[in-house]
Structures are given as structure tokens and as C-alpha cells.
Length: 321
Ligand code: AQP
Image (tube, rainbow, N blue to C red; front, side):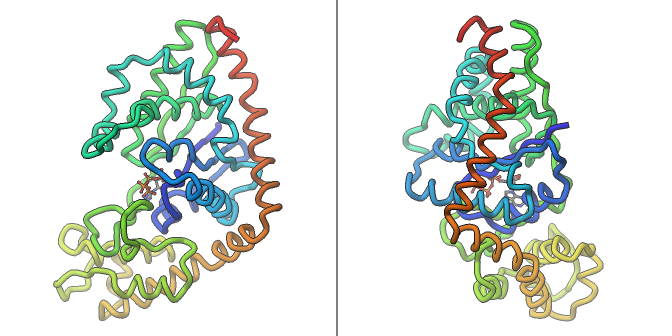
């Protein structure tokens, strides 16, 4: 089994990325798994090139600091030639109707002045990410399952039209409780690209800032200290974060506090402890550019060597190259 997943450098990594994805990748990852920083995906909307480069390095350092084996991580654009080639083969196997049916495209395109063609075609690039590495399992959030379905369809279609080349992947949706909500608006998920960082705790925030952000988290008017997601979403979010750090259930945790202040203190301290080793390792990697460059080069070399045979076969069977 090969598992493949990614994080997009659209902003700094936050505790939702950590508790919902990165920590799981580090704990559950097998020796054949691959994780990458999807910098090419960050180009589908307006972005700043200098910031993108910086964020890509930062996220690479965070993945390694979280405990993912350094040779299992890479930066997507280090394979841009291989991915470019495979994307083209897959675009030529994908219909316009299929691409334009993607719900995320419709949502993200709405309200944007100029819609980049890459926003329409990036699910095909995502299929190339998956198929190039012969990934069989793709851990994703609900919003990405449709894209993995597209990768499945394209793999099957290519295999039946030109010959068996690709492994057919399946999406693995993380169990519930992995969705961390914004601290200042618990009706929306914590997000890297939200304007204003008050409701987002970044994994590299220093302990004082973590404390301040948690103290100012929105709680609900209700004085009851119970885990009720629909009625008290602010409190429920805090309890879920605490549950994510301690391994206890949110219901059980709710019973152990007598004030919102006490809940917030406990959440802040648990988070600071959870993030302490990750933050220390990531900052030390970022302070040592040569080491981070070496990690990056080794990850790219492994991912590239794994993909060579698949790409060569796909090109040959498609009658090109
Ligand atoms: N709030 C969250 N709670 C739990 N898990 C989350 N993930 C993202 N936000 C939360 C998971 O983190 C992994 C990497 O995310 P991504 O880079 O694909 O970004 P995203 O899902 O689009 O959400 P972000 O991080 O908030 O970025 P932007 O602002 O660009 O939308 C994924 O496994 C994701 O499920």
C-alpha cells in the first residue's frame, strides 16, 4: 500500500492541519508512503512568488519536524517536469464536462474577477500527483473526495484505452473530530488563507501568542459547560482541540471544568506542550538552510526515481515520447 497526501503552501500551517492531518501522517505513515508540499496547487489563485517559496520551505520543515521520515517528503515543483508531462496525458483523457463539474472549482471560481485556467485543471494535476507515485490510498478531507474520484476515473480510462499503467487509488476520509474550527468564528473551519490571524493558531506561533489567541476565542453565551456542537460550537471546538491533544473524549473533558476560563487555560497549555517539540525542530531546520536543502533534494530524488517507470510506460503506451 502506498499512501500519498499533501499540504498546500497557501499560508502558514495551523493546528487544524496538524491535528487533522500532519500528526496522523507522522504517526500512521508506512514505509512506502509519500507526503508533499503542493506548491503548484497554490498557483491557481493570485499569489506572491517570494512568499510561496518561503512558505514551501516552512511547510517542508514542519512536515519533517512533525516526525515524517525526511526521505518520505518532497516539494511538488521539484517534479514539475514529470508532473507536467503526465498532466498533459491525463488532460487529454479528461473531458471538459468532467473538469467543470468539480464542486470545488465552482465554489472557488465564484467571486473571482479572473478565473485562472489552472483552477479548472488542477484536479487533473492532482490526479497526476497520485498516479505518478502509484498511490493506492489518498487521505483527504470531504472537499477533496471528488478529485480523488476523478483520479480513479482517469486511471481506469487510461488503463482500458492504452494498457495497464496506473494503480487505481481510493480516497480515505479522516474520521470526524479532525475538523478544527476558527476560534473567532466557529462556524467556519480554521484556514491558512483566512485574512486576520486572530482565529487561527499557527503551529509556529510562540507560546505567548498561542495563550492570547486561545483566551480570546469566542465562546457561547450559555453558561452550561457541556459538549454540544450545534448549541455551543465555540466551546465544542475548544474541547475538541483539547481532546486532540490529550486523547480524552470531549464529553468527559467538559465534565472536568467549572468555568470557560479554566477550559481555555487547559487548551492553551495542552496546545503549547503539543506544539513545543515540533516548533523547536522546525525552527532549527529553518535556521539551517543547508540541512533543509539536503532533505529537500533527497525527498525529490526518491519521488522522482519512484515515478520514472510509470511515466515512461504511460508516454510509450500513449504513443508519444
Ligand atoms: N481546520 C482543519 N481541521 C482539520 N484538518 C484540516 N485540514 C485543513 N484545515 C483543517 C487538513 O490539512 C491537510 C492539508 O490541507 P490543505 O493544504 O489541503 O488545505 P485545505 O484543506 O484547503 O485547508 P487550509 O489548510 O485551511 O488551507 P486554505 O486556506 O488554502 O483552504 C488536509 O488533509 C486537510 O484536510
